[in-house]
Amino acid sequence: MRLVSPFLQKVFYPALSLAGVFHRTSAIGLAVVTYHGVLPEGYEPVDSALDGNLISAEMLSRQLRLLKAQYHVISPEDALAWLEGAGRRALPPRAVLLTCDDGLLNCLTDMLPILRQEKLSCLFFVTGASAEDSRTMLWYEELFLLFLRAPAGAFEISSEGVLVEGDLGSREQRRAVWWNSVKRLSQVDSVARGLFLRAAHSQFGGNAEADFREGNSASCRRFGLLTRTELQQLASAGMTIGAHTLSHPMLSQSPPELAYAEVSASRTRLESVLGKQVWALAYPFGDPQSVTPQVLAMAEQAGFQAAFLNFGGGLGTALPPYALPRVHVTAGMSLAEFEAHVSGFYARLRRVAGRSAQRAATQGQVS
Ligand SMILES: [Zn+2]
Image: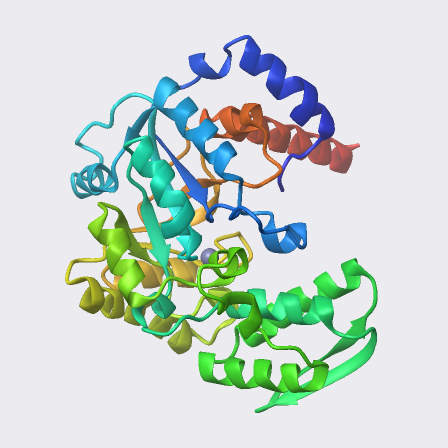
């Protein structure tokens, strides 16, 4: 459950921000922030389900300046030292760690210059695709564009034992078909997924390569994934690299042995390309639906020292090393709402709302 209401966003958070309430909240713990890159100039967002995790370069600068003014932004190495000390080594008050998932090309071309300007470092979680020489794009983004552009009507695609069928009409229908397909295709390996995409392209027409191949175009920076050389450039610029599995499946849907291979091999693959230890993992998608207790156990078993979720973050929240909560930054988030999340205010509000709902339910059962 995420508390989203126009009242909170437009009235409550700005009023509290103005009153300085967020600056006075808990100083304890660590708030980990999740970015997904920056919208490149010239790129027109297609759909909030597709582009809603990327923010403008201007908003990123504003958020980073706010964090520098009100918090202590620690480096990934400081976070590792704190984790290795099992929490004995103290964090500075109001500590914040920056992370960014997926390894899109814009991390290097659009986000890195802003981080450098603000003299901050970030933990970038990339997939096995960024250990390769040729550029590719995320399979689930390719799938989204495919279903968005496909002709309306009922369809059925069958490839290598994977059958997906549905009805494409409204934007909502297309999003629902896409999300069901993401879950279904997470059950198979990346080769079967690639064959399915090829079958879907030949059925619907269109070519995904146009979305990410064109040199340094806005579309390429939005959808293209970092290649091996570009990943090495990001690491040489002082950024830390973490793993995000080999091919970004929803791990809760994958057979356990496939899920473990995705987690474990991404670490060894990236370590061989970077020539250094990869100690952190971010679970793909990272929402409660994607991460089961069995999946959480895999990160430790695969030799990571920390693993990150993509929800529940903010100062003052519990910090289990293999289920570290994060604040998921979205395009629709105002600066005041960002503050409400990072300061831990939102997490407390949610706990109170949860307790009230539980109390109401219990009272309802009794009466
Ligand atoms: Zn991701």
